[in-house]
Each structure stands twice: as structure tokens, then as C-alpha cells.
Amino acid sequence: MDNAEFIKTKLIEAGFTEVGEINISDLVFDRSIRTICEDNGCHGYGRSWACPPAVGTLEECRERCEKYDRMFLINKKFNLKDKFDFKGMGQAMRDFKRNEDIFDDLMDGAGINYLLLGNEGCGRCEECTWPDAPCRFPKRLHHSLEGYGFDIGRMAKLSGIHYNSGPDTVTFLGAVLFDETIKESIR
Ligand code: SF4
Image (cartoon, rainbow, N blue to C red; front, side):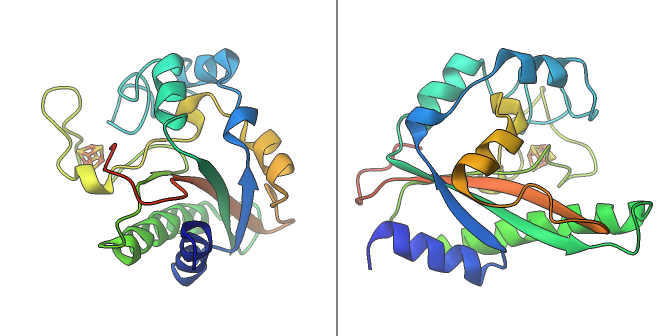
């Protein structure tokens, strides 16, 4: 099994719903998306190591991504009681992050270089150490897709997976960048 097949298998095993591929050369590190972060619409800006400015400039995000050979975009659909089910949305976000942790555990020891990006910020700790001390759980730190300037709707379309799964559902997205062959660690 090659690295791509192995990773795809582990993503499904970890509980993600769909896996699509996007060419790293098609990524757009969009300044206008980063500006939305800076305007703090989701209240994540400057609050953790997972969001800007801690993730670096857009150019640094590009350099980080371009170290890898391939990229999968992933999602998970969660059912809600209705569109006002904010409690369900919060639980879905926590569940999505738990799926990411399960994936990391499944990849442990596989020897494959990869970078897992997640939906929005971190929120693992009651109070983040940013910016005064290093992240408490660097191996569990998944940068925000939005923080890299990615238009997630556009990416979902390019990779052929759902961005929106219909009424009374919420869909969260993430991404895995990885090497096709086993190389020395570049993380
Ligand atoms: S794991 Fe904790 S310290 Fe690290 S980014 Fe998340 S909230 Fe901050």
C-alpha cells in the first residue's frame, strides 16, 4: 500500500466522512481570507498557536505546505436537531477535533511525514499559552485551514467533497499534506 492509500484508510478509520485530493500547486493563500481572521470574526485571531499570527505569514504558510508532495481535503458531516442547535454545533466541533487526534494516533509510528490542518482554532486547553510559552501539546497542534488564507468552499469544490451537507447538518473540514515516500522528518 502506498502512502496515499495508507493515509486514506487511516482517515476513514479515524471517522472522517469524505476524502478528496487537491493539488498543492492549486492552493491560493488568499490575503482577503487572512483579513477576515484579523477582523476576528471567529474570535480565534491571536488567541492560540493554531491561528494567525502564530501560524506565520501567508508566505511562511505557503513554504510549509510546499514541502509536501500531496494534499487531501477531508470533511465530516454531523447531524443537528435544527439550524439553531448551537449546542450540537459545539459538540460537533469537539468531535471533529477528536477525530483528528484519533488520526494522529493511527499514524503514530508509520514513518510518514504529514501535516494535519484543522477547522478554526484550537481550544484544547482552558487557557492557551500563546504567546508567552510554547504550546503544551505540540504534537496535537493543528493549524487552522482558514488561518492559511484558504477559501475552504473553493477547495472543497476542487477536491470534489462537500462543504455543506444540507439542512440540519454541519460539516467541518480539515486537510492532510503528506509525502509520497518516506523521507527524513521535515516537521
Ligand atoms: S494545545 Fe493548548 S497550548 Fe497548544 S495551541 Fe491549543 S490551546 Fe494553545
